[in-house]
Structures are given as C-alpha cells and as structure tokens.
Amino acid sequence: MATSTFDRLAALVAQQHAVDPTALTPATGLADAGLDSLAVAELLFTIEDTFGVNLGDMDVTDVPATVGEVVALIDSKLAPA
Image (tube, rainbow, N blue to C red; front, side):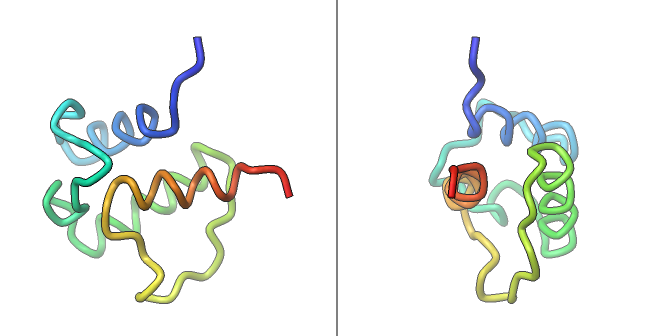
C-alpha cells in the first residue's frame, strides 16, 4: 500500500510538533499548524532525511507557506529529471 507524500508529511508534522494530523489539509498554513520559522527550518531538514531529497539553499522567500506547497516541493524533488 503506497502512502502519499501528504500522509507522510502530515505524520512528520504530527510527530515533531504535536499536531493532530487529521487537522492538516493541503491548504493549512504552516504557521496555522503552530510552526514558527525555526520549526519550519527543522521540518525541512527532517524532510531531507526522511524523503532522501536535497532541498538546497532556500531563500526566505522560497520557503513554502502551506502543507500543500511543502508536498509540491517534495514531489518536485522526487520526480525523475
């Protein structure tokens, strides 16, 4: 059974930040989920380790604002070149 990127990300956020994963939707803002800028940075490092992707050096303006944007970023890094 395949698990979607969204489901895996929701589980990570829930595990790291005591957020109810069922409360997350693609439209949920990371700030609305209770993640401040430091928590988002930590989440991005965890995503790199968990999904085996390199998110590279992100500018502050590049940091995703919603769960759906994070999912899209992960999926874009996992897509074959």
